[in-house]
Amino acid sequence: MSSAFDKTLAALDALHAQDPQTTTLSDGTAQPQELAYAQRMSRWLERLQETPSDLLGIAVRAQHLQRWKLQRSDYPEGRIGYLTWRRDQSARAGDTTAAIMEEAGYSQEEAKRVASMIRKQGLGRDSDVQALEDCACLVFLENYFADFSRKVEHDHMVRIVQKTWGKMSPQAHALALTLPMNDTCSALVKEALGSD
Image (tube, rainbow, N blue to C red):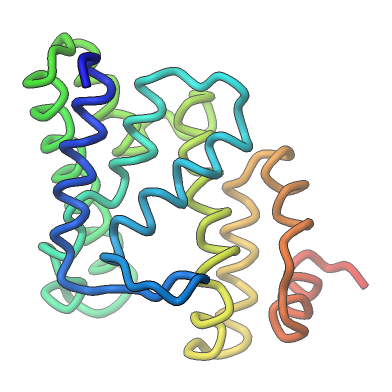
């Protein structure tokens, strides 16, 4: 691995692999939960953009970096607690990723740019930040939506789908509508979008 990009991804994946929680993949094998998430993010980026920049590729791979180190339960209940937790998560992931990038040979400016993407600064105005958000929404809908919908009250789940949809680009909308979904999830999406 000679390139700064390869070194950075390898370092990120080594941290992802330390996640104590595991998930079972479709082939039945277990994998650290965060590593599975990061790889899913990268796969969606490949579908969204034919030739994404290296900086975007790093930001997408690092979005949930060491997320297990800041527990949601350590923050107050409710929306303010949730938003504070998310802000702290993205700041921590951005700072850690920036340090890894500089160590691998990227400039401070490039590292700051990636940290800014991970913090989702410029969402709605910055095409790279939008691509990262699209990946996150698609990973959620493809891999976590069904389980999540079983734990959350129906009307709240409809609002979550509406908020998720509102953050996505038209291209991501089109991809999301091709995802296989069980009847419950499909009905939730139709209700959220106001379609029959």
